[in-house]
Length: 178
Image (cartoon, rainbow, N blue to C red; front, side, top):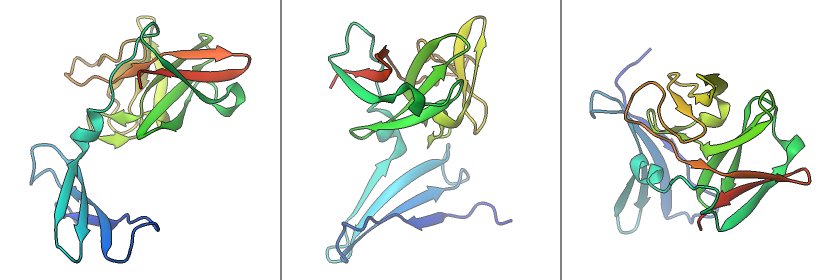
């Protein structure tokens, strides 16, 4: 196994023209303080390079309280989401993890991006509870987050955004500000 190498993957969409390519670059932790995913767009004609850090993607997620929600987005039907596990939806440019906590007869929604490893994986995490607080454990490194307020239950500084959920006539809605 080769460690400490830079991984580059072509993630160009079919809509992009032949003069532009998009690459995902994963820099190893020996180059940076924390492993960071960079999206690089390179224009072949003008050779300009634009870097978008994963931290900028994480900054678009903010917690929404039920009384603040102005838009209720229909995420799907109840049967579209697995019981006692997570599913993922996309709202605009956000990935939202939705959890049907059948054991508690409650629903929760949060950002799908783990702020620790900066991966879109929380929907695949393990659900549970600590001191009667429903939680999600990141499948990458088991960092746990409260599904009620997004706080990190491991005592770290990381926090996730949470969103209100309504279930009306067998349909699941997620509340957003915009």
